[in-house]
Length: 190
Length: 190
DNA sequence: CCCTTCGATGTCAGTCACTGTCATCACAGT
DNA sequence: ACTGTGATGACAGTGACTGACATCGAAGGG
Image (tube, rainbow over all chains, first blue to last red):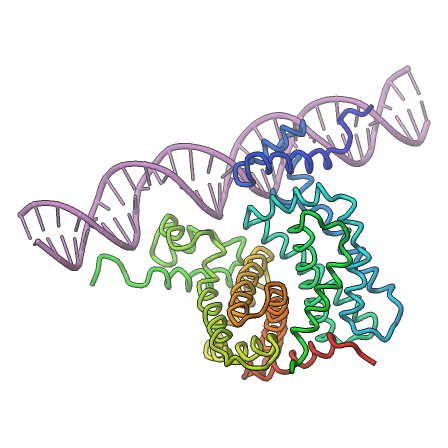
C-alpha cells in the first residue's frame, strides 16, 4: 500500500457531495471537505480549480461521448438536430446507470445558484463541442451553432423531465418527446 | 447638493467597466473600483451583490422588455418561436443606441470565464421569463420551456453576429437570418 | 542494498471577495 | 432646534484560493 490512501480525487468528490447535502454548499468549507476525505485544504485545490468544480468532474466525459456520437453518426440525410437528438438518446445509460448519484447531485445543484452557473457554462462548452462535430459534417458555422444550442435545450428539457419524474427510467423516450414538442413550437403553425 | 455625489451606483458601474478594460477582471479589486468612484469597498458591496454583478445591472430591464413584448403580442396564429423572434427584433434599439458601451462590455465578458457564467445565468432567467409569457398565452409548460430556450439560442446567435460584425447596425435583420437558419436545421430534411 | 529522482501531499503565509456591526452625517419632517 | 431616516464610512472577521517550500514513500539505476 502506498504512502497515501488511493483515489484522493474520488474521495474528495464523494466527501463534497455528502457534505453539500448535509449542510448546504455555502456552509461547507473546502477545509471541511478535505478533512472528511482525510486530506488538507491545499490538496483539495490541487485536484479542483475551485470549490464548485468538485461536482463537475464528469462533465468532460459526457461532452466527449456526445461529440463522438455526433461525429460518428452516419452522414445521413437527417437534419442536424436529429443527429444531436440521436446522440442524446445514446447517452441515456450514463444517467440511468447512476440514477441515485445523478439525482443527489442535481438536488444539490438545484439548491445553489453558483452551482447552477457552473452547470450552465459546462453546457455552453458542450454546445461548442457539438457545433464542432456538426461542422465536421459540413454544416456551416452559424447553423451548426444554432443546432448545437437547440440540442442543448433539448438535453436540458429531457434531463429535467427525467429528474422530475420519480418513475422515469429510460432517458431516450424523454428526448424523443421533447424533440417532437420542439419541432412543433418551431414550425410555422396553422 | 447632498452630502454625497449623486448616482453612486452609476459611478461604480462606469468605474468598473473602465478598470476591467484596463487591467482585466481578475486584477481589478473591489476596493480599486470603489476608490475610482470616490467610494469605499463596503459601499460597492451594498450596491452589488458581488464583483461580477456590477456589469449586469441592465439585465433585468432587458428581460422585462422582452417578456412584455411576448405577453403583449397579438394572440396570433404564429408559432411560439415567432413570437419570441418578434420580441427580439423589437429590442434591437436597446443595443443599437448604446453600441459602444455594449461592445466594450461584451469585450470584457469575452475575456473572463466567471463573467461568462454570470451572463449565462442571466440568460437562463430570461428564458424562464419568456416561458412564463408563453404560458400566459396558453402554451403548455414543456413546449413553452423549449420555445423559450430556443428563443434564447436565437438571441445569443443574433447578438454574437451583431458584436462580431464591425459594420452591423441593425439588430433585427440578424434575428431574422438566425431564425431562418434555425428553422432549417430543425426541420426534417430531404 | 544504497542513492537519486519524482510525484503527491503537508505546512504556512498572504491576498482578496464578501459580511456583520456600529458610527457618522446630511436631509426631511415636525 | 429635535428627531428619524437613508446612504455611507470604518473596522474586524471568515473563507476561497495561491505561491513557496518541506516532506516522504515509491521506483529505478547502479
